[in-house]
Amino acid sequence: MTQKTPSLQMNEAQLMTFMREVFHQVADEFEVEHVADNEITVRLLVTEKHLRPGGTVSGPSMFALADVCAYLGTLAMIGPKALAVTTNCSIDFMRKPAANTDLIAKGRLLKLGKQLAVSDVLVYSDGLDKPVARASLTYAIPPK
Amino acid sequence: MTQKTPSLQMNEAQLMTFMREVFHQVADEFEVEHVADNEITVRLLVTEKHLRPGGTVSGPSMFALADVCAYLGTLAMIGPKALAVTTNCSIDFMRKPAANTDLIAKGRLLKLGKQLAVSDVLVYSDGLDKPVARASLTYAIPPK
Amino acid sequence: MTQKTPSLQMNEAQLMTFMREVFHQVADEFEVEHVADNEITVRLLVTEKHLRPGGTVSGPSMFALADVCAYLGTLAMIGPKALAVTTNCSIDFMRKPAANTDLIAKGRLLKLGKQLAVSDVLVYSDGLDKPVARASLTYAIPPK
Amino acid sequence: MTQKTPSLQMNEAQLMTFMREVFHQVADEFEVEHVADNEITVRLLVTEKHLRPGGTVSGPSMFALADVCAYLGTLAMIGPKALAVTTNCSIDFMRKPAANTDLIAKGRLLKLGKQLAVSDVLVYSDGLDKPVARASLTYAIPPK
Picture 1: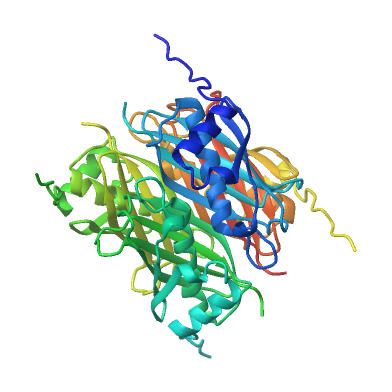
Picture 2: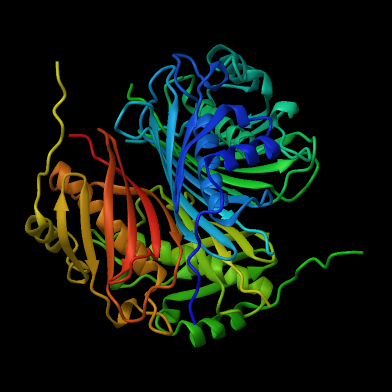
């Protein structure tokens, strides 16, 4: 007996459409740049509201990006389930983001179980090669 | 030789004034309800921008509240140091917040070292007795 | 329609018996001192194997104590389910434990859901009033 | 003025020697398989004492491996400083390790600051390609 390996259920455009329907308040802030089996890249289009004094991107904005990145990377593999919820996030803020610069999050889906999905994410200031933050996130997947 | 036990350096009004000066973008969202040695209570005044579909408060808003709560609880004991930075946060989202209801964060300062301060926070929907989220946060304190 | 509030299913002696049956390798290291609804106190009987140079208790020993404490505090409310598994732990090491001294862990069960249970734990060197470590842990509960 | 990029200070043999001197209680359990700039691979030689019923490796053993891996990966870049201490660990247990099988930890040093170093680690059952655990760890580096 074999178990089917999950494969990509949604592409970049489908993820964007889903986000606009379900999270219309924030969908314009994010851009899915790339999605593939168990990996995803999402951009935060940084504007005034994401900034702190000195032009640096705020902690909650980095958290929000990591969360959206891991969430969409999970949905990409299980299909559109708005009810999947974040249950845990651990985030390390490692460097000050560059001023007035978009952030790029690169997520990996490490575990896709029936009940739980676990991802990790590295967040970069666009154009720089050292990450500004690292996060790991768990989602509870609603029963079918 | 004895080591002085740290004591409260800033009261509720001083913390609010500091926040308005340094984080004017978000200061109006938060209200310091109570501060004492190693403990603090902060309210998030929930408005449209904190909500997700169904009226529930978003994850990033809960994160932001936990962060502000632990940050101000730390500053209350060390005095106004805008440069203290969040280095780590672990947060568990445990229940769905009540719709259109303020959140109340209760923080404890567990460790105040020379370089690092560690706090934990429980977040409640105003009026309910079971927490919606739990967070622990570490701040790096700049050298004198 | 009402939902039954969970109540204590196992007392101190029952938890110790369960641990000896299921985790006989380590059961002798731990002592359940007190259990009540949603709270528990567990002692680590510190011996040579828990120590690092200088007599301080090792990080893995503190982790193991926090894990056992939160696990037994969860089982106390749901009954003996050996299959509940730790899915996440975040732990902050805040102070050096006293040399050659037992550790005491005080756990609180913050959320008992159908699928997930979340606890937090403070760990003390026996007799001292400031915690040496803080941990939060999540357990996945097997379906009935 | 330029800042020197840190480079490797200790090779596999030097790390093993350091561990035997400083952590003689546990040094025999671990083997540094590979170290390079900002990356390291460490093996846990699984024996009876690491096991739980069914032959699976215990949570504290996985934690200990992640901790040793990140610690040695940090020391490799800063030189032998026994006083560097773990301040935070967040760990996700994602799959059951294979029975009676060594574990392999692959660590990356993500941030090496003056005061803090942050790493992440993936832990595998030897020979399998999906990780059993994921951890991120922070170390406080003593001032010179």
